[in-house]
Image 1 (cartoon, rainbow, N blue to C red):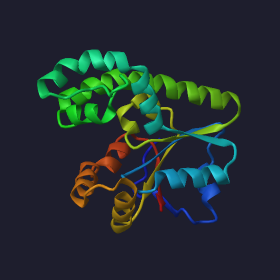
Image 2 (tube, helix red, strand yellow):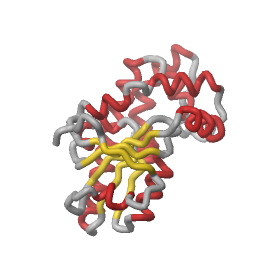
Image 3 (tube, rainbow, N blue to C red):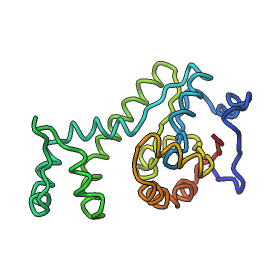
Length: 213
């Protein structure tokens, strides 16, 4: 489906939100709900679900955590040598994978990040596809709530539409500071890292609609 030059826009408070989301799509459908850090994706997702009771959502942040847990042994085998070189301990006292330690190891090294994604993403795809199939069988449509769904084209290709959530910069800064409690410099750095997020979805060729939060 071709992307429009000027995506449709609507405010989350609009009384026409239900009609905007449905947009003539045949049920059961699958759509992607995305947006930058602190844009309010989770709030918008809950709002849509309250308006459309025959829609179920899956939060891919949670799915990634589940996938990491299921792939723990492979992750430890793969990254133990790199962690040893850096003096990083990848397990907590109870033997569980320490995700913060893993993040400290891989997020500044693109090659290691790609290794981690190659382990985790296949499991994320498997879990998400299973969720979609189960919901569709029960007659429910699906919202995939994810920031970087474009990294898994196997899932993005299942989406009939992409809803991109936007919010004013100041509002996002306040939300991020209150929610995450991190330094302003870190927040701005993450915002900058997501600067090309919209174009990454635009390049998919799937219709995009903007939801102003």
